[in-house]
Length: 128
Image 1 (cartoon, one colour):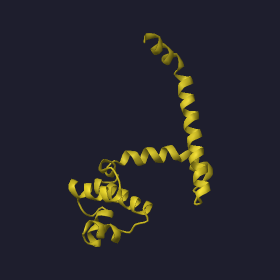
Image 2 (tube, helix red, strand yellow; image 1 turned 90 degrees about the vertical axis):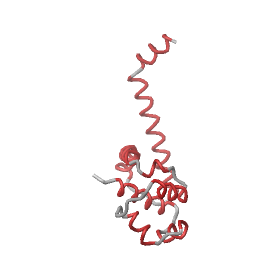
Image 3 (cartoon, rainbow, N blue to C red; image 1 turned 60 degrees about the vertical axis):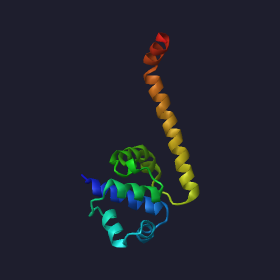
Image 4 (tube, one colour; image 1 turned 180 degrees about the horizontal axis):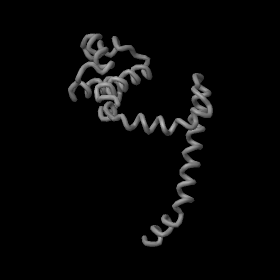
C-alpha cells in the first residue's frame, strides 16, 4: 500500500503531465530547487500542509485531493469496464467517444439502480 508521500507525489506528477509542465517548471513557480520537487514527486520528502497547499494552488488543485487515494481508486473502477472493452485511446475524438460511453454507462447504472429500488423510492415519496 502506498504511503501518504507516495500518493501526494503521484498526484502531483499526474497533474504536471495534465498541464504539460515539468518538475523544473513547478520548482521555478514555487521558487525551490528541482531536486526538492523531485523528492516530493517520488515520495521521498515529507511535505508540510503549507507546502502541499502552495503546490496545489500552483497546479490548480484542491489541496484535499492531493492526499486522497480513494478518488483514484473510484475513478479507476468507474473507467475499468469501458477501458477493458475499448482499450486505451490517444486521439481527441476517441477520448470524446470514451467520455460519451462513460456517460451512457452511468445512465444505464442509474436506471438499473432506480428499477432495483423502485419500491423503496415510491414508499419514501408516499411518506412525504
